[in-house]
Image 1 (cartoon, rainbow, N blue to C red):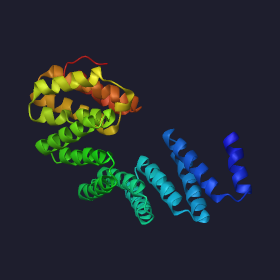
Image 2 (image 1 turned 120 degrees about the vertical axis):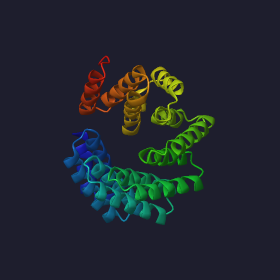
Image 3 (image 1 turned 30 degrees about the vertical axis):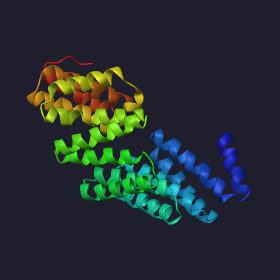
Image 4 (image 1 turned 180 degrees about the vertical axis):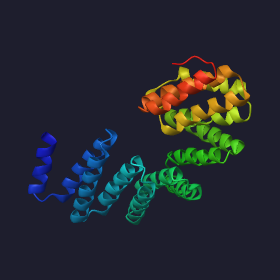
Length: 273
């Protein structure tokens, strides 16, 4: 109620910029709650308000939010278009970091749509912009490039990229990126038959558990490690990887993916969470 009153007040005062910022916040909140229709409507209203206010950087910020909403809705082409537009506007107005973030989002949508070449271009440009700005988030783009290597089953290239990025992040004291890299490398270890290293990686993930580890890429990586271990490695490691993936999907509220893992565990004669 208080938020609605503030929004009404901004509209009555003709504060289009304030209105756009409020709508951007509300759109993000609704998107996190899964209320995508409402999020989209508020983001579009926020975009119109930002344009009325004549604030291009704010316009880029709202475009990126709208692109994220469309990605959640599975409209990947529209999402990548909006995020690229946001990146172009941000770059034109000297907002390198905002532009890099938008490009990373564009790459995510392109990857989800199966356009791996387009995703790679977006990730590399994001990495370049972050590097020019001296930002450690260039390492995030490196992790995403590694996911393209995984998709191509270029296991050695992916592992080297992830290990290098993880070590750089650790040296910078960035536990989040370092931890993510250690999670994402799990299927590379399994694919190459490095069972001792895979077991160590799973033990490390379990011991260093935090809900912040739960992202689609980390959950899919743990799940894939289980699939590869089930095919060629120790069944116990497959079960351990699938249990980790089950936990990650649970944090993401993906009961459908948890159900798939439970079926796989039963089929392999392994305990089910």
